[in-house]
Image (cartoon, rainbow, N blue to C red; front, side):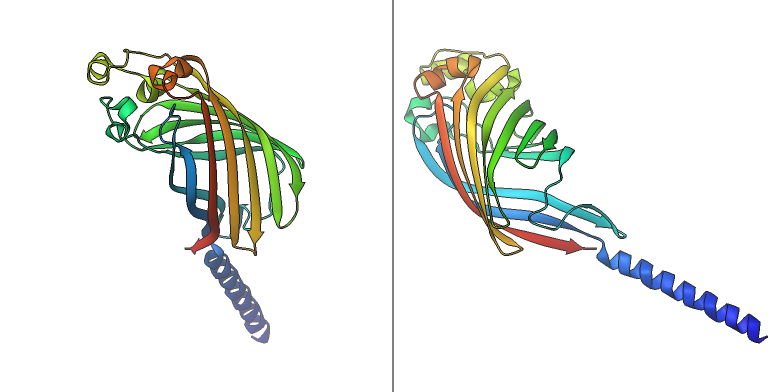
Length: 259
């Protein structure tokens, strides 16, 4: 009998330990994001030669944990070396044509949200990526972006990177932002224009991040892009500028949501 009791006690202890372990793993389940907001000084619309300051935002998935299994990392200095698959996100500001005399008469363009996936490769001192996105809200077009970065400064608190960027857009994308329909031509006085898809711009990006502890950071970006191909030949751009520069500054915070 004593032997049976000892076996039952041991089994009960194992069961309790298993339940506690499962409960602990369950409690660790959750998702961690980096969210941020700030300001961006950029051309008023694609091809413009004048600039506006507008809000800008960032959302990045850092980690996803389910029952103790973690994908990604909560460490702000974590960088997965080697090949990777990642999400891609871009918010494209709309265009209210009546606000600008040089394009008055063109149709307004609504704000667009692009979502997609990308492939990348990260090494200690450099990285490269190729992203493809679709305008799930707004332009409903396909875009692609290719880039690489050299990382001359990378410490626990400060990171600096610089590298080239190449941007492609489908014919629908180019018609949305650079095209002029016959009716728009009549209303605006600009020549009708129907661009094809292809290379939209080439450029350079300089990015810096300063870490303010574990959760907060300040991020800055300086971009220079030159419109190319059919985008550059648009009457919208011809009366504006092919040179498209921007600067942005934002405050970010890492937030976790357990479940």
